[in-house]
Image 1 (spheres, rainbow, N blue to C red):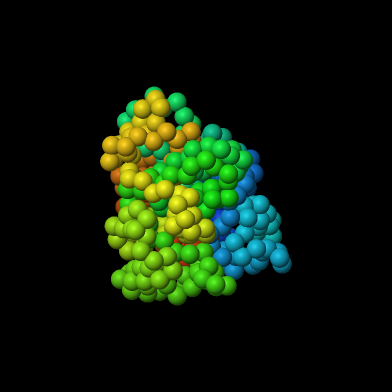
Image 2 (image 1 turned 135 degrees about the vertical axis):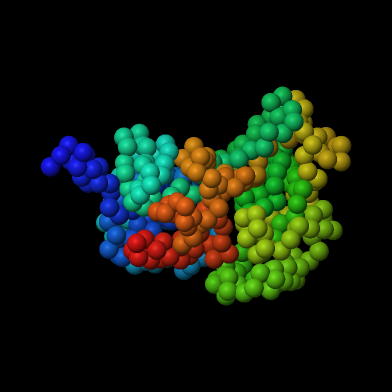
Length: 387
């Protein structure tokens, strides 16, 4: 055998024959499970030292907004007695149980710096060296990096600015004047908790109104009807959500809440805006405990200037202003991201110019992240197994 032939054989043997999954959250774990079930050799690369690290870091009040029965992965249920909307500790336990039950091959402490396409395979550059693979599934999450806008004058502000992901404890807000910026899913999640804190003032700065649903109507957990809603045409799902919002909450514009720019299902699809869930915040708004204010024009040392020119003086500003995928460093040169860093394709969709590259869990779904991850995992596994 000539030297050139030996080099080719060695190179081919070094290419991982199946799929490398980047990220061991719910989406990464379930796609790995489905790949293995389909007979695809699979490994999972996880930069953290343990599973569910983002859940460990989030605030103690955090619960799933999706119902327990619609937030499972194949073959594993939540333990008896788990609340309808599981606390973050239950989710952490569940993800570890799922991984352990199926013996999923997670490599911890492996951070991916970038990936490049080499014609018939992918080169995955990690902190532990270069890996080669036929297929790469990126499952690092759409909320990987909390995003705070660069407001004018924000560096001069003497108060505290945090992202909603770092909400902390209710006791942190006792006697404080608190401004929540953003009336989306994260904003209402924060407000739902803040109503139980003994804050001096609670303000909500809202430039756009939310598509808003109650967590429950009577004893019915509203999320339980999400599989039905997901099968409807966008216009019909929009109409049902709008009617539900109006019947349950009334006309919220009377209390300063702006109208949503478009329907809830349409915004999920067009700009990936998740539907907000109310669990007490609306009642507090109507009672005057939460004052709804215009958007933010800028900051001064002593306060926040609103779009109407008024100045308020919060001690704490909570930026419920969304997240970014943080994928630019990993795949930014491949032309697969939009201007907000969201992959242009997701789930079973692929780019024929980049065969073997897959994304999962990168967009919100009316079904919830767990249920959507299951659907996308099956599609990806089927696509890879065919190849």
